[in-house]
Amino acid sequence: MKINCDFSPMKEVLRDDIRRLIRALQNNIEAIFDEETCLLGDFEKIKGDFLSIEMKAATFYLNCYLSPFTDKYPELSTSVQNMSRLKHGGLIVIQREDPLESLLTSGISVGADLTHTLIESIFYPGSPLHDGAVLVNQNQIVSAANVLPLSGRFTGDKKLGTRHRAALGLTERSDALVLVVSEETGRVSFAFKGELYPITTLVG
Image (cartoon, one colour):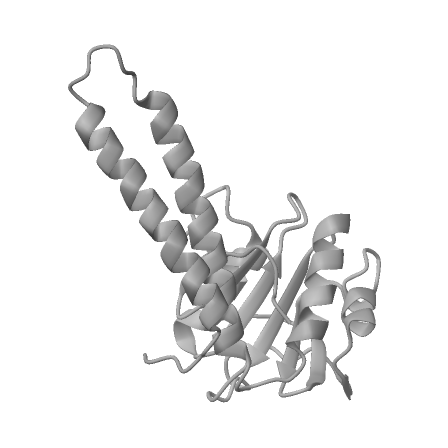
């Protein structure tokens, strides 16, 4: 899928980070036969640097995927950052081109403009709507407490919670994008086309 998303400063950052990572790997190739050198510490740092690059890239592409379908990703950014900090779990479906009515069990109709305060109040622990997913279409919250199909690929993986399996399940069957905030860790991820990506933040 070709992505038309011209955030050249971020592309330059990613390019420079990748070049630094390649140089570090090349240095390790040259040092591997040095009996005085142990590369294990270098490997740990390289692994951390790689994960950092992956999260930056996921954040960049997330904005590319969202921007044609909603103008409200700054509001989404604020909501998931606040929920992440407080460890309030959340599941936010952004509808793209595919219709989703046949893929989810409809919850409670909302029909309101998307704001971070409304999303945060929906997912506040104890709220009657906090279970299930919020459905966003363009700049509106269509409904809350929607039930999504679960992915069967990770049934035996105890580390993957129901929200993440639901995000994967819907994106395996549609082009929707699903934001997930983990209640256990506060980490934010997004699911797209049946894959899950950790993100740092949503750049507005």
